[in-house]
Amino acid sequence: MQEFKGKVAVVTGGASGIGLGMCRAFAARGMKLVIADLDKEALAKALAEFDAAKVEAVGMPCDVSQLEQVEALAELATSNFNAVHVMCNNAGVGIPTSARNMKLADWKWIIDVDLWGPIYGVNVFLPLIEAQGEGHINATSSMAGLIAAQMMGAYNVAKHGVVALMASTERELRAKKSNVRASVLCPGPINTNISRHSVEFRPGKSKPKADGASAGKLASNIQAALEQGMQPNEVGELVANSIAEEKFWMLTHPRWVKGVQNQVDAMRDDQLLTRA
Image (tube, rainbow, N blue to C red):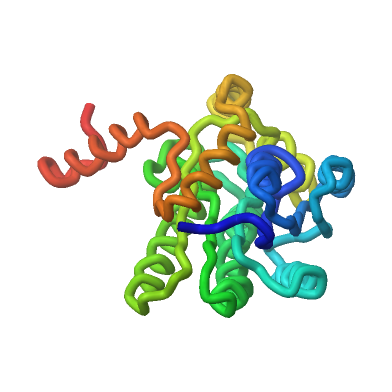
């Protein structure tokens, strides 16, 4: 059972959305916080919120696609709190574009943030957590990491990679009988600004390669679904409770696993991707 009080949590993408929900849940359990985010204004606002609540928290702007910045985040944590017990690789981006039409620059950007970010997080932070003899490392994937829907090619690829990364990490930790656990968060629709933030922080901020009316409609549908989705604070509580219970799979919409089962059934019975 993971203990929280007096321990240290690091959260990337922690100044808004799911990340901020995680920070609030950890703070409510008596943890100290290290918050990373590219949005400097949101970061300052989050730190002010925790300062007013008398929560020990530090933060820094951090591009998780850059190893040296992830290393600097670890240095911030250890220099301020001398330890890391929980690490949540949560920062992510995504734009709706088909796999066949997406610009290579956008493929690289999305995979750098959504997959290399967690890879760097595991590489840099897992040894720090293991040095404590206990703790937990988590990464945010998506239901897109379990079912590859159309028009989200690079996002699907990255999020599938995150599931594989964390599953491999957890199996290896259990094989060595470590007290450290790993897990993956696979959210469905959550009321966050990931779509808008992705556009804002997209390198060059040029428009994605046109995919016709279907891409624009999909983008609108995704944003509408997010706005009607679960609240980030609820996700934060789910994550904290799942860490306490040492769960690997963290599912905000467990009923959607039926889609995964349907895909497996089609694979087994018909060797098809999906059934009509």
